[in-house]
Amino acid sequence: MAVLGPHMAVPSTWPTWNHRASSSEVARSSTGTSRWKRAETKLRCAGCRSRDRGTQRRHPIGAADESPLGRVRGIDTIHHTNIMHGMLRAQRRQVTVDAIAGWIVGGRFGPGETLPIEPAIGEELAVSRTVVREALKTLTAKGLVVTGPRLGTRVRPRSAWNHFDPDVVNWRLAAGVDEAFVHDLMELRLAIEPAAARLAARAATAEDIAAAEAAYRSMVGSARALDPYLKADIAFHECLLQATHNQFIAGLAPVFSALLRVSFRLSVRSPAGARASLPAHRRLLDAVIACEPGLAEAATFALIETARTDIANRPGSGSPPAKELHA
Image 1 (spheres, rainbow, N blue to C red):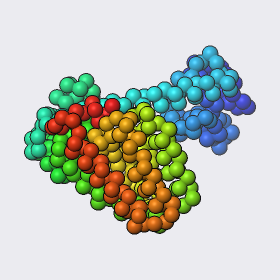
Image 2 (cartoon, rainbow, N blue to C red):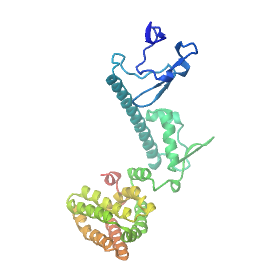
Image 3 (cartoon, rainbow, N blue to C red):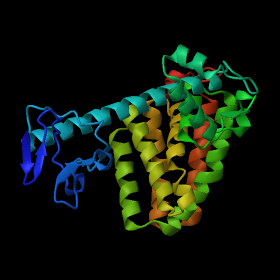
Image 4 (spheres, one colour):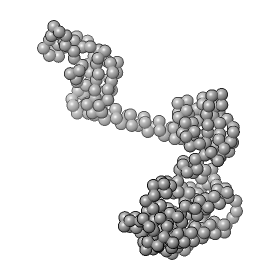
């Protein structure tokens, strides 16, 4: 018999738990005799505050190490294991989402066509039906597919897709863009960015100006290397969107980052082209600093028109390759 305390004797064959029993685990009868009530047992982990109901589960803490440090190490192991499982599950789900989206955007399944059933998709992608089901829910939320009884999972027309979702934009870029995409992109820029520059010239704070100046200095410093320059250029335009202090225009920054990458990679083809664009960016920034909305709007309009001309005059013809846009 293992003695727990006055009037508390437990058979030595009972399992030993790695967590100490809390006061709620011990019920005393009216006669003063203590006994375990399994149905009411709630084991609480002191580190993560998680609960195990009943006595059927236990944390996998090494039985040989019952010290407080040993229990903490065991708790850390549980946390790390749970985190890893969660990360792997999320990774599988995202890979599945990207794969099915690639089928749709790439044309394997056109608008109105029905995707394979969940077990078939899971077999092809080597994932469970649960992962496939979660992936299809994500694609439904982004407008690519619709599901329903006796309908299966059907591809929606491109006009129904959420084109301001960064994932949708990246899927389209991965599949390669066509001339219509580029045309619509430039029209979008002309509709949004000049107005945003006008607002930024009115609302920009000292912090906004400092951020834009830092991005511009990065452009100047990296103008001889195309990739760092394009990254700084995107940051510059994001700063101006944020400087509007308009929650809806600033909220466009994530999707605009992907779209601007397309525009810049098509219009700025060399370090020489990067250096040539610096004066136009400086004029735009100076107009914002001077609180001149009209000048800022005109400078942005001129900047985008120059980019459109550069794209139209780029060497070759047809759709730019996807690898070029993601380089």
